[in-house]
Image 1 (tube, one colour):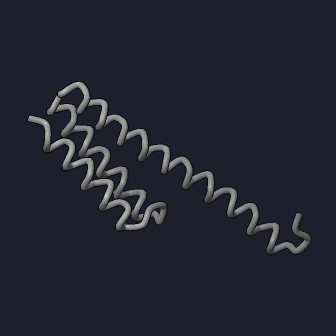
Image 2 (image 1 turned 180 degrees about the vertical axis):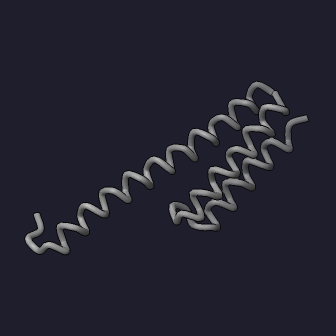
Length: 87
């Protein structure tokens, strides 16, 4: 354990940020799973609704610095491609 006051604060801040990042990542994963669940059901309307929600969640995570912008672009592109493949 750290002895210096600033190091102790760093540990606390890092724990807080890690917890927040974990929650955001979890929300992104959940929204992605909902899109794929709608795709598996072959429900295009639900898939489009879930896609817009997932894109919003991913974009928020990117703006907060949880994901790199290329990672978020890749995730959004894959989801969009999967939803557009539904016919």
